[in-house]
Length: 155
Image (cartoon, rainbow, N blue to C red; front, side, top):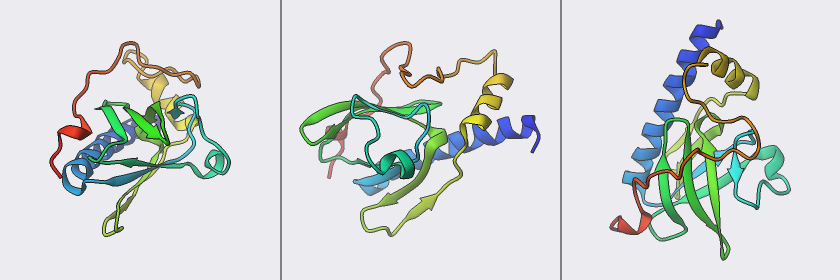
């Protein structure tokens, strides 16, 4: 695949994953996101632990709590998620999202994941566009604006 087609594929897939996220958020109540390990995936101070470093992490999104300050941006999802009693800032690049599914697994959507090398090629092609820092300590330049709050959604 040539570099121009790769850029178009990455942008199209990011948009598709974002649309699916919105669809699951609006239509399913509680749903799950399986994110594979990625150099820009940030799970607060907790990070990926144990087998998650190899297989990724399944994160829960839903209206009954555990999610606040949710923002689905162009390159990533930002949210504060609750792990036990601790709230962690989470940055999930669209490029590492592998799967969405609902509680009963009536719907299960698997998607392509881009490697770090493919994402780097994309960044080179998009040098004039604003892209995320590729370090492990990635943070957006400013606090994301809140688009939705889990507590505002009726059950």
